Amino acid sequence: MAKRAEGESGSNPRLIAKYTMLVTVMLTGVAPHRIRRFEECGLCRPVRTPSGHRLYSDTDIELIKEIAVLEGEGINLAGVKVILKMRRGRRE
Image (cartoon, rainbow, N blue to C red):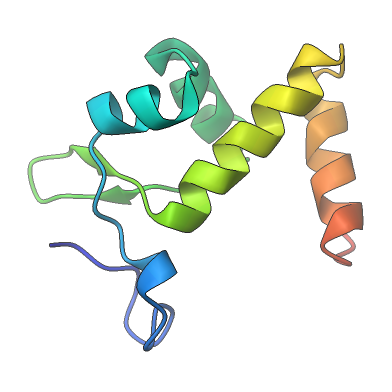
């Protein structure tokens, strides 16, 4: 089972990357090409296995669902990125 970078997941099991793309699609209802687009835009960062497969954590699943809701409200991905940063109290 892959994990986030050392120290990043600590003892929080929600940060352990354990879901494949197929499972992530089933859990979120978001198509694989959309999830890959979220990654390309820097909205999510799945862990990669040595063979290059993406693995997602529970936190990633929640984030993908949140992005999909915002996108469903007509917000483009650049706008989603700004909203997520504001919600998390980060500034660019």
